[in-house]
Length: 149
Image 1 (cartoon, one colour):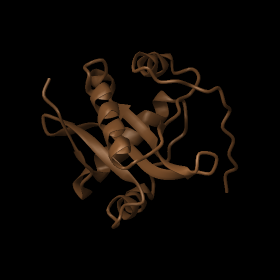
Image 2 (image 1 turned 90 degrees about the vertical axis):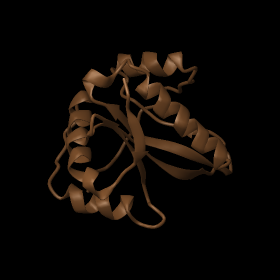
Image 3 (image 1 turned 135 degrees about the vertical axis):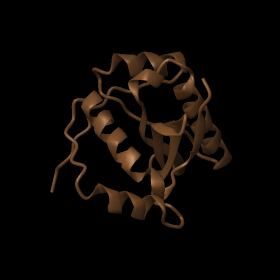
Image 4 (image 1 turned 60 degrees about the vertical axis):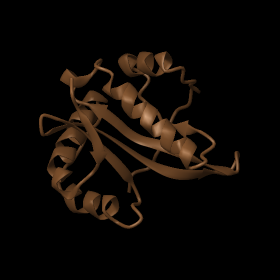
């Protein structure tokens, strides 16, 4: 299958919001798309971008995305690449696209001198866990907490 991985462009906004909704549903989470377009564009198109995003395009349609930031670790005293989201629409999984995305993210992390690359997935997402294990990734059991405002 032919596909293109490229940087987010303003015209991708609606597709990205739809994919975020599908991603949230896949992770059994709530997603409210209202008001997201302007906020996403403001961070993704800023210079430098506060959030980096790549989209996966097949036959002119955006079918997946990966978003990431560069964060600093106090414990390690160095920057790491944090994969905020990585998602492919169901028909495009298992075709090597996710592996390609992860490899490209790793290359960026190495090029930027990061100490590592980090991400998370829900404990029930067995498909993703198996995928990450096949990549040779290591995991730590943690529970993530948050307070909504």
